[in-house]
Length: 272
View 1 (cartoon, rainbow, N blue to C red):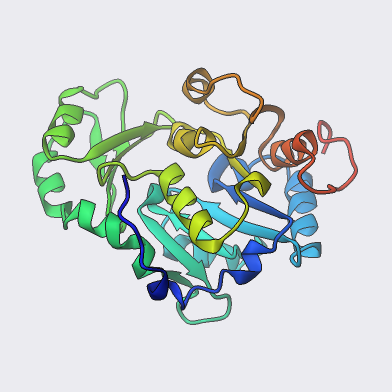
View 2 (cartoon, rainbow, N blue to C red; view 1 turned 135 degrees about the vertical axis):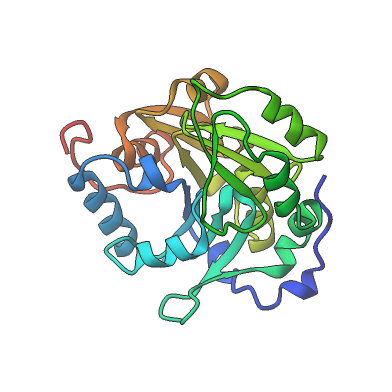
């Protein structure tokens, strides 16, 4: 269970506008919001930008704040908030600022306590672990490795558990070490609650195993077309979880239509 957050400490968070949104998209990036054809991405992005008064956007990704800022400096819409580092970062976004993706200390306090500056211990304990190659990006409250399933030995998972931490393998390529109980789903629910947003107006979208916790946390959810098989196998077949045929961005729009969350752009999603 996550620790309660003092509402007074959240006064700096401008979440009032999000509480009034008709629809909020909480989406993974690689393979999901950034996935699919250029036409599908353009349709999704243009639709969001045309309705920013009543559509909210939250990125929920394994990427770090610096990557998000660099991505949105291009032609990708800026989110209102971002959950990065597989749930270990919760940030508000201020486009145009020198540091546009700013972690929200009050919402991260429990995450920081669970992590406890474990990075050096994790790197030492997994040094030389079979099938794991340390990533050099200075992620926040996590340690990440490139994962080689042909060489990997499950002893690494036991080492992480003995440290009191969680591990997550996703896309058959990545091995993340995270604070106990921290993942995309719990961090998304924490953010939604403190924004005062309506959970029944939120769509969570993803495509790999590190999205499992947010696709199965009680929100409307979509596993977009092309999702990895372990994710599809792990997801229950319930009405709130849509398994899209369309790939990436088109799969998001397919789910918006399926759940009737907001009037969406017209067009054949199978051909864009």
